[in-house]
Image 1: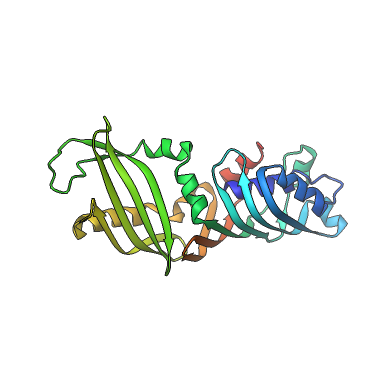
Image 2: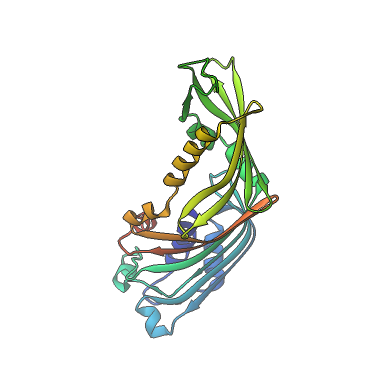
Length: 270
């Protein structure tokens, strides 16, 4: 959602009570939000002048390649955003704090390269969060009861047929013992909102993870990833397409944001 925040804040911040948004101006404003930009095109379809003064924009389209967000260790290989008509409270324009009057609907397409995702997984920010997740009693024979392991050195490979391979090391607290875990699984999105792992297989130090244990882990993950949880914050998101192939992942989604959503509260602070 940070991407959507950058784009909308860049464009909505340009709207004045008098009116017109120029494509080039919007483009330059959005570019400033990124550390690196290989290519970025912005098209703003302005409504007739009398509607624009009332805060209406017909459509916003953004297409970019090679985008790196400031302060984030992630590069976006390709990005496409297209909104429906945007209706803004004209009184909020006078306060320079654009406020949406009706739900904002937009399509979003993102392509990530495997090498860029792995760079993110190795970033200090991500590893710091990963270290907070402790694993207890990972030994399959339970010979080290009570030993606490932390997760380090995650690596991912994107495979054919919507499958991924994930490797990660488990290290004990004094760093004297390391265990490598490898999991490979297909990924499927059901009902546009819930992730499911398909035919997962895994091993610890080359020893196969018992199916019963693996199924428990998979069931837990399947329950955790459900986009309906965002709806409490006034944001509806559905995955329309998930395409994983060697070296990259592509996701197309639909996003609908209510005017009362916490997303817009964040947007107005930018």
